[in-house]
Each structure stands twice: as structure tokens, then as C-alpha cells.
Image (cartoon, rainbow over all chains, first blue to last red; front, side, top):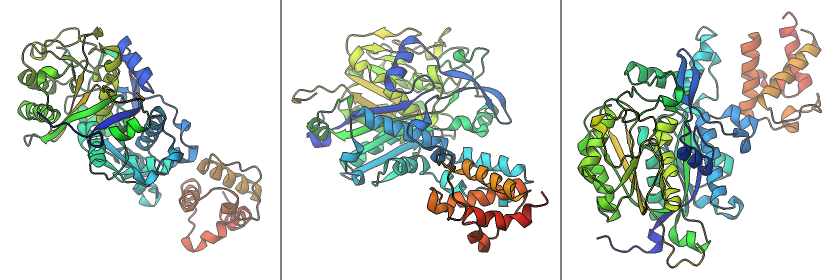
Length: 422
Length: 83
């Protein structure tokens, strides 16, 4: 049993800003998830030709000048769009906030790959003479770039940095924001994750060389976690950033509260560069449940990490079965089946897509599941059609990454018992 | 290239580097940075474009020659007249 926390020690989500391949805000994204609308399309990539990818279609000029776009990175642009949208969604006025007490914490899978590839491509036209190498290269490739561009754009003077955590990055940005609020380092956190991976041929080529790049005649059917015919990852770009506040602050200003982060955990497989470990995923889920002070049967929705690879999906299913049993109470879905793998943004985007379930009691499905792999046969997996359920009090979000990093976040429905405003 | 062509080329390069700025009233004899938002990294972009497009090297000691549009044309004219 976890002791009751004071409202200053409870961290809530009060704003969501996102861009996904099938939606540029939470309302659009949710609509697409309930309508079964994919965001995967054909996409030309340097040296690779046509591949399949999840591409975002937000308007970067909504919050940036053309010069900022030219100078910055795609990841920075995605981060700025999401951070600005999150602040607006939280109904906060930046001009009225103490900007020295805002922190920006963004998970990334990698950063700098895109910019380095671009520069090498550019100097190739000059016989690799490095005097043609751009003076913009270093500020573009520093690992803090996406978070730093947010602070430049919004005039935020509190801390900013990224968290390199492979495909667990989105959850880690969220967790870091929560921790910094608990440590009283900031009063408001922008936490989540971003990805510009679709602009890198190396990411696609790497997955192809691993034999793990998805292909399908119909792009919308390419990402098919848990299906017998799955054949790999669909690389996607995207971003998901949450406004996090202490419950006491959120209630004071009458904020809309999407949910309370009650559990989280991060651990490492210490096993392999790529292959996952069911044992450590089990540990990670149990750690997060313990932190939340709840049991597996309290969880109502599990957003699976499943990426559509032959190796990864069965391992996660095995881990889920071990924690939640053969006949779990929780319903499970998969968000990547719609948008592909948004890498550093995946954890944040996938959590965001599930948050509306606290209000509409609908679980969005995993799509493209035509022939269920027996090894991935999870009871209560919501397949191809959304499912209405009776109770949504807890959502658990799995997000795992290369080098064996595992992360789990649990969000609880917020009950405004003593809140006059909500 | 004639002086007018050099001026037009320079304006095209600057417009590409600072696309949000209105360059229609840019005075030739006043420092460019006093008239539009153009910082040191933008200035290096001008130098880089001259290098990439025309193979012209502007040494750091000559950067002050490019402060105004008129000064830039005068500095570049002998280097670009045969292009």
C-alpha cells in the first residue's frame, strides 16, 4: 500500500501537444485511431528509393519563421510545434509564466544522424572538400538540439535537455519531467519525445540490413504487430509533448486534468544490443505497478510496444502474460499499427492516443491484424475495431528500446474529489 | 557579370538566407545588418553561398568589405566580372 501523497507530490498531465502521421492534435489523432485511419505512406529516401514511412503533415510555420526553419532541424521544428500546442492546449499563457521555472525534457532515439547525412551529401558535390561543410552543423547536431530549439522559440530559460533512450525515449521525457517537478527544480515541465528519423536514410538502411524493415504493397497495411505476416518496422516521425504540473498548481488555476502519472519504471536488459528480454520487461512492468501501489488487475488498458518484428512482439506478449496472466482484466492495443514506429516520440504519442479513453471508455484497436500469430495471442487484445469497456481507471504504457532499455508509465484517471474547478 | 547582375545575385542569396525579411527597400550604402535581421551565422551563409556558387573565397580579414550592398558589389566586381 502506497501512502497518500500530498497534492504537491502528485504530478498530473494538463496539456497535450502532438503531431502524428495521422493527426496534428489530440482530437485529430484520436479520431484517426478510432476510425482505423493509418498514417503510413510511400516515401522517397535518398539512396533507398521508395520506402514506407509515417510522415507528419503539420504546418511548421504556425510557430516558426522561415529563417528558423532553415537554420534548425526537423526534430527541433516538431518539438516547437508540439510544445507550443501543449501550452495552448493547457490554456496557459506563456507571457504570464515564470519562464525560468519551466523545464523542457525530450526523449530522442538519436539525433544528428539526419544533419550529418545531409552535410556529407552536400560536400560530396564538392569532392568531399570540407570547406563546404556548414557552420550550422554543430548547433544542429548537439544532442540537446530539439529541446534547445523549444527554449529559443518560446523564450524558456529553465533547464532543457534531451534523453537518449532509443525507442523508450518518449516515456523517459515524461518521467524526467515528473521527477524534476518532484525535486522542485521546475514548476512546469514540458516532457515527451520527438523523432525526425524518416529524414535519415541510415535508419531505414539499418533496419533493412537487419531484415527488419517492413514492406507491403499497401502502405497502410505495412505495420502489423502480432500478425503472422508482419515483416518489420515502419519508420515514422512525430512528436508528443505533455504539460506536467503539480496537482496543487493545476487545481489552483482550474486546469483540465487528463490524468495523473502514478507509476513508472525504467530498467535495462543487460543482454543484447537489439534482442529484448521478457524477464526484464516483466520486472519493469512490476516495478511500475509497485510504484503505483496497484495490482495487475487494476490496469484497464495496456498500450503495447510491439513494433511488428518477428523477434520483439512475442517477447512482449510473453512478458505481459507473465505479469497479467492468461486471462487478464486489461484490454490491450497497439498504436504503431496506425502510424509506424515514431522512435523517440513513440512512447509519448502512444500514451497521448490512449488518454481520451478516460472520457470515452473506448479502447482503440491494433489494426492490420488479419492472422494472429499464436505466439502473440493475448486475451483481450483489441483487434481491428475499437472496443467500448465499462471501466477505465488506469492505463499502462510500454515502451522499450535498443540496448535493452525498458520503460513503463502508468496514468490514473483523475478524480476531482476536492477540486472546485475541474 | 555586371555590377547590376552581381547586386541582383547578392539580393537573391540574402533573400534565401533571411526569407522573412522585406528586402525591397534595402539601401545600398547602409550596413545590411542595420536594416534587416541578419546575424553572424547568416553572414557566414552569404560567404558560403559565394563559395559554393562561384568558387569565390572571402577571407575573414575582408568580411568588413561586405557590410553594405554597395561595398559588396565593389568588392566582388573584380572577382565576378569574368563569370
